[in-house]
Image (cartoon, rainbow, N blue to C red; front, side, top):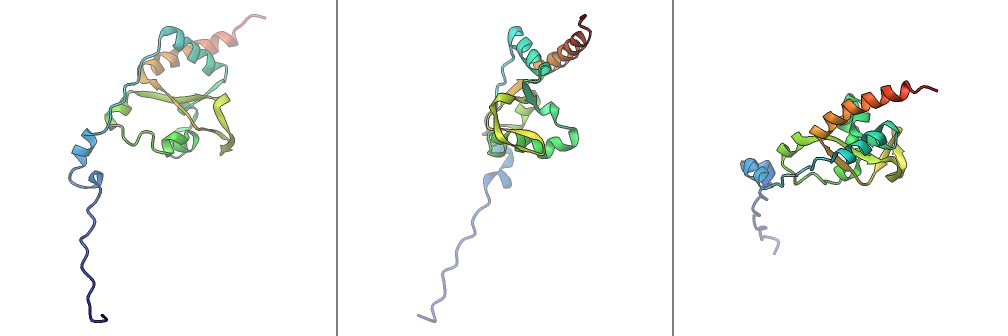
Length: 143
């Protein structure tokens, strides 16, 4: 028995996303369809944003967005977008959630959410303009 040699094991092939099949693997991923909001829902989003009831990925500074996004919005860290085609991310305006849904802890002063919403980029462009107008309107309220 001491003279027996162990059988040679075949090497484990790399996962499809790391091999020459990466392009085909991406084609198998899902495309997400981010619906556009109705005008009423977009008004609600703008009001909630200006009234500080929601936190968005736009609240993160550019230099911290890459590292903090998945810490603030935990579903990202847990892989909620792992099966999504990269092309789909071109339609993402911001990721957001209501502060009322934040967990009991924070990370570097930022809330931690266990759920998220995605706003279409066209809606985000419309919302940014409306947010700026609403902030200006609120600052100029006659008392």
